Image 1 (cartoon, rainbow, N blue to C red):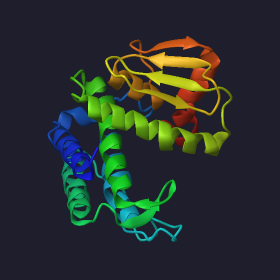
Image 2 (cartoon, rainbow, N blue to C red; image 1 turned 30 degrees about the vertical axis):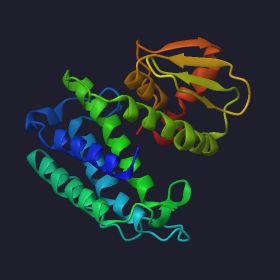
Image 3 (cartoon, rainbow, N blue to C red; image 1 turned 180 degrees about the horizontal axis):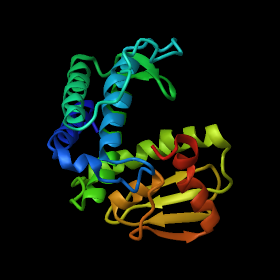
Image 4 (tube, helix red, strand yellow; image 1 turned 90 degrees about the horizontal axis):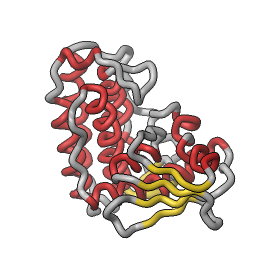
Length: 238
């Protein structure tokens, strides 16, 4: 996907969150243990909205990306949390649109370009939109094939190897398939020992530790579980 596609995708997710009713903030989000919707909204506004633009503007040879982020002393609550989200995420999107996507910068995965942060922001807000929509009994984002493929590719190419390096690479290789898509992905560098398959959003959620009943797992279940549990182990499921 092109950088501008990622920014439009992010813009759509921001608009969805910003329109949540205040009463939704107290609802528990099962996919994020210990959190309610307000926690997720603040997590995105602060952990993404404040920090990602700093990453996109950090020179690639500088290791500390977030030293100058103006972290708030406390997280806003209630209606203030929604206003804070709209303001910070709006500024984040505005900053991204002002940057050259090919601007060299620092990323979680080493030197890269600003476009990586655009993509990361679109996908992270999508994942948490899925979490919150499920908690509220609402329809999830209507992801198209390009978005599904792009988000799964990011997990396979960047996120899961990064998480594996943090906790120790799990043995075995996982093959990933998605209904109605011809693409197949592998994580690991040996013949696959397990496979997951299912609808695109369900497979994407599973790769981020949110395995539901729509995902079919075949082969060595322990191999699949180790890969699908990496996000929870490395990042506390966030």
